[in-house]
Image (cartoon, rainbow, N blue to C red):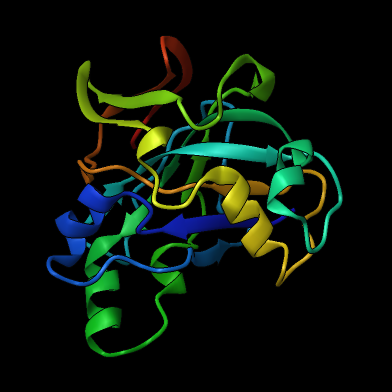
Length: 204
């Protein structure tokens, strides 16, 4: 099982973190190892190797068929469920790595950095018109809709499958909207797909 993630997929978030940089012309892809997976409402423990860990709430798609070089018009056949996930980012490390021109996988791929909620059938939603949000301690901190993506879910699947074979159980984190910020010990995170709470855990 591999975790595929998309960066810079919402215009306002791009401006939030990257200022006046031009918007990407193709999906920005990075990977997380399977050891990054955090599920079943288990707590997230802030690691000791960084000073700031940010939440990034995202729609997550579960791959349900083996596929390579998938045409965009057929991509919908290759996933069966969706949920809300958190792409945790060691932000201070990311800033340093980027400034030094170094790869920044470590700030994204550390243990438990890919939290996911309970799955819901994809067929219950219009994949490109899903509202989702993240609440921390009862207050909404991020709210987005997949209609605002730069690159649609099916487009991302077609693009990624040109480079690597998608396998059953792979996860696709599709990008975060504006509103990212740091977490602190004791925070209670709750994620919603439309009005369905699918994610619920604490920061330790």
